[in-house]
Length: 321
Image 1 (cartoon, rainbow, N blue to C red):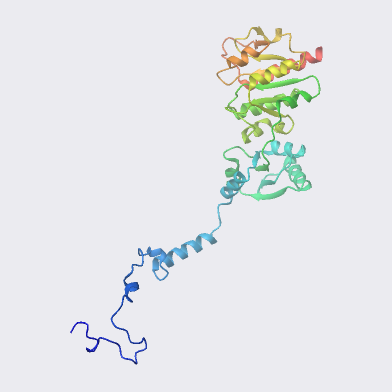
Image 2 (image 1 turned 180 degrees about the vertical axis):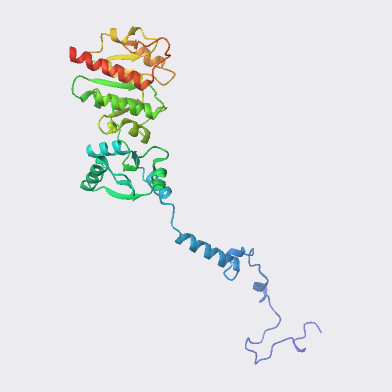
């Protein structure tokens, strides 16, 4: 009869370990609750997929990482930059540029430059590491490294007004949005060779002092200051107020470079971008725009070549003055 607790099996025996209870009283609800979605095979410890995953992870942990790629990634993560090549690296250490690590090819054909490089690195407390060609290729990112790569802190740019503190005669090169870092490096090399006070580049949309610029400058990047300007036109106006004349270089200039009367004084030489030349506002700010005489069969000169010719002309004019 329903509700009759005296019927057989309605209650547990008094001797039961769990004690006597009438009915379930909801005590079995927990057993009916869901346990969530079934874990994936590789997440279940007793499954063979889990064990296979554990073995694969252990093997990966023991395998040596690609050192060249890992080092390149670490260099970028630390914000470091690279000087590539023997001459550029040697010049950087000669100038006392603080460096972190010198990577040298394990089977390098050592010459006087390599010997001095390693010696200077040891003297200056720079870590020297042997590297394979593959590792150097990865670090150099395609640049010709000659078996040598030097890790250095990011290039420290000067302020445009800092260049006015250089010794006379003041000669400053302004690059009007030069795009190719190799052109910038070549201009840096010529500026150092002809005694320029420094170089000014725009902060945006222009080549900066990168690995390629360091390489092309052949170490001049350690000797010639480079400043960044937020506004080239305003910077040129400031230089004019400081007593410098601004000479722009352009194939369609108003005068021929040899005829310019500005070369022997405090001077700013402005070089236009590849292909586009001087921008409108920069051209209007120039005191004079000069062209370099070339053969009619030649369309134009490379920006770095034009800068070199103008720097040489200015240095010669200053000596004659």
